[in-house]
Amino acid sequence: MLPARLLLLAALLLAGVLRPEFARAAPETAAVFGIELLDPGAVGGRPPRPEEARRLALATDTLRAAVQGQVESVDLAPKAAEIRKEAPLYKCEGCAERIAKEAGARLAIYGYVQRNTNQILNLSITISDAESGKVLRGGQVVIRGDTDETWLHSVRWLVKNRLFAEPLPNRS
Image (tube, rainbow, N blue to C red; front, side, top):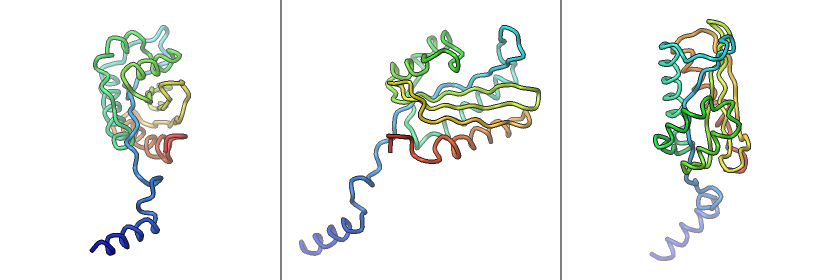
């Protein structure tokens, strides 16, 4: 019985099935922040309109669901007041990474929708290293049409085709 097990083990090693470099590592921890709104046409900024706020929440939920399996999300609820204070994260110069690190995450994932016109928007999402602040991956897509489906399709497309199309640098 023992020789059969040894033969099986040797065959698996030769086939590369048990090679350590092919072992799936635990996913990285990430702080997945809410997607924000940038409306350059509004002087001094403005809070999102109710329909925009609803779509931002839908897009954020879609982003969190789409990155599951690629990263393990950390709970940002204890940091909610600090996130609100530092917002918008896309222009706070490193606060997203600092908050992510304090929350126990190794990555920060954040993004924003920029309203250009009523029917043309841009979605940008960035993944950065919480320790160094280095941008590891980012992507941008134009949203043509201001509907739930166009926003959600854009989030899913960016995650699949830009953010996790291949392993993150120095993380695989």
